[in-house]
Image 1 (spheres, one colour):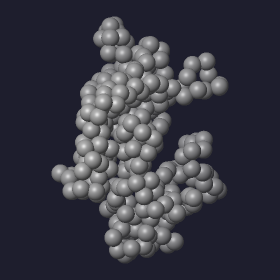
Image 2: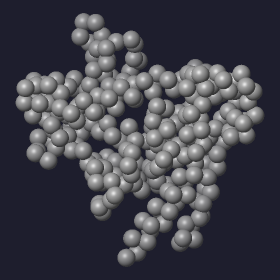
Image 3: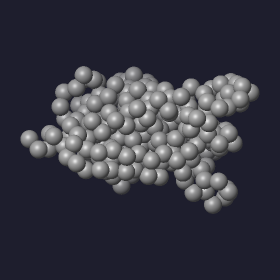
Image 4: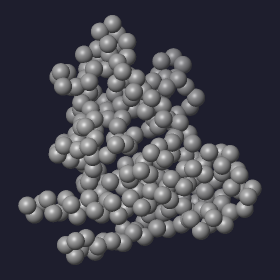
Length: 264
């Protein structure tokens, strides 16, 4: 159950948020949205895959990017209860935590003239963005262990300022995504990607329904098209997505390690 509310320092002065990651907090998921403006960070730890979404209003499918965290529906191979080399991750074994996980119980809201509020899942018109919080989220608490959202005087805490920056990054990525994928489709740069691997226990796996940037087609682009991609800021994102595919083997290694631990 969720209950989204406009965050304010009167009703929510004593609210805190647990900056921790675990299955009981809703973090046991195999995929999360990969927002365009974080691809260059995601590529260092995670595979970034493209997936097609049927769009009845368009002749072509609509594409979205996801970050792969595991190979089963509720499997996040980056969750851990053991100490890691990333002490600030609090249960997440990687230096960079994807925005979709990092934002926790927060989401972007938009305030229309007259005070009407809608959330980011609805049609966002040009309005002032505001921070909403799901007050029923398991990470929301009043316990001392949580991070405060407001200072005693009522101002935003450093944690809330940090979250506001992450939400702005998500908002800008949501606006960028349609333009990015339109350019990729116009240049025919998206191709199917089949992922096959074997585990140490002999299991063989094949993941279908995924797409990637075509490295061959990207390399064959003419100078004018490359220049347009570069001027738009898209070219580094494409190379980041391609580079991220090397992390598939690292994810397989994590899966093998998890299986070995379960046998102990």
